[in-house]
Length: 289
Image (tube, rainbow, N blue to C red; front, side):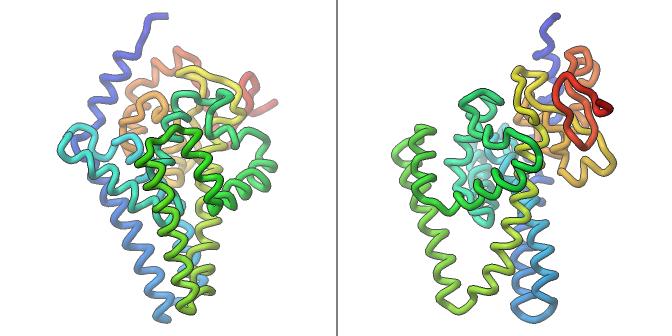
């Protein structure tokens, strides 16, 4: 079959702005919303449980700006402003207890080696129950393990400066949490951040890591991830239900996945991409089997 990569790249260029203002507004709005939610709860303006729910949703959504920042999809064209990608990525990664440079390197390897033995995201391989009840919780617990982070930095071959910066950032996160507890706000930290973090990031990892790639058995440009069409999918997942578009054309911002998908849909259908519903099927099977 004739290569269609050039046509796909042209579609991406048409949907890649100089500055992805919706992503910037999303990042600023989410960070401000998290701060205001905590402030309202701490000040007694609304219940702690309500703030916890709001914060879980915010923490779930915060990964989207981080994700686009990894690929410089926030400011992809203007070299003098490329630092904005890193700044937004680091700011949005902080409430997620992520170290941006380490995560970005791991994410690049995920793209280069999707579903292969050295894919850093292969932790998500398995059935829904095992992944959500065992593998994701274990992943989240290890987020607080500095030894695991250091080993990841070594395995990903981060530069000396990036390794040092990553570990310093982890120490800053830890010191901040310890200071909040020492100030007498340990319960508030758990209710307003730790529990919402666990819930929000758990759902995010399910929707970003497990669902798009299940069953992690196929490789290749058109088959290593999928398209999931279901009601409100674009809104509920911030268009990550169209995750295949991101893997094919990673500099397209999240809010333009649908436009690119519709434009190159005939190409995708000709290449037998996986177009499914909410629940992923195993390759070679249909939802009715």
